[in-house]
Image (cartoon, rainbow, N blue to C red; front, side, top):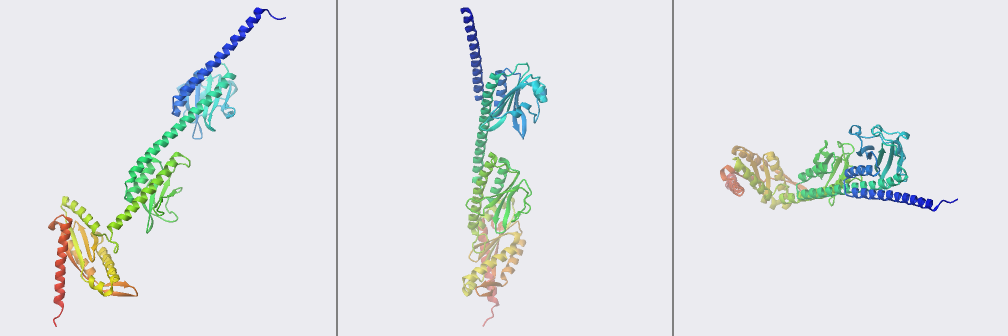
Length: 485
């Protein structure tokens, strides 16, 4: 038998009130979820995302404890927490609650009574009665876990779990955005550093300086544990600069003496023999640091090739092509710089001007090839006799010059005597099909800065004039030795 109309009305009113309550709760949850999304959208750093998440989610689900565990070094660490007493906050790697083990992207949330599961001490110390856990995953990458706990015995119901699924998804997206923001900022910072480093290296034209700065940049900005640059020359690969390890001076094919696990990178863009970069303690493949290393290696290759090219051009500009000695331009530049320093200190400097006596006769008798061989042999004797006491150069033709700093006049005259003896000895000249013996001899003039002034041109002119006087005396002496007919 049906109820009265009043009963039906009361029933409808009760159903309506229940529906309104459900709708109100759903609206409230949706509003709070929107507020959480808005709050997470205002922060970009991962640490700020985690701090915001635990506070907002604890309020959203009326939880007494909220924590986020994040991956670190193969384990989990407490990334952020709310409601845990400071004395119970774990340090370092933490033991994850048992409910976390069953979470997957397909089943990202679980809830259980604390009495029905095993909780770690740091969480159990807060006295939870009900626990809910969520997996934070985005685009297939796990970012950690969210843990909620209530101290009252009020289970997380189906609606809570459904809402928590949406919440962990939103938090995971916010973490992913934070990580992306951090990587973007790191890449931007590296690009700025790369631009700064490139600009600083671009102006370097000295090989040793360029190599040293490339090494320092690698160690400071990548970073790497050790680095070395070897430059190829006629003797093999020789160390130009190195740091962070005990690098061998010369690199052989077996890389003897090189630390184990060393990465070798050829520094060649256009020149296949520019050099080689050796690195220890390098970042892992696929990381931003490794990408930065590769960029720096390319920059280093360009800088090194530029420095080597500049060195070759400068050597060609400052070296006599035939003898390999410094030429007039280099000698005058070096002489002027030395005289400037000596003018301030008051030291003395000697210039020996050497002109060969019999060069024209050899050249006319045996040909230009013999003349070239004589000049080459003379340059070798001058270098051997001078040694470290001075700088020998070829001015041009059969004229040579030697500059010696911090010498006395007797010392300079003694060196001139040794040179006279060396050049006056006969030369054996290798010519096509035969070897000829010739005697050329030379005349030497001495100029001293203390006597003639600290001007390069004046000092060279004084030495030249003294050489002309010496030549006249040698000619007169030779004529005096010729018997009259």
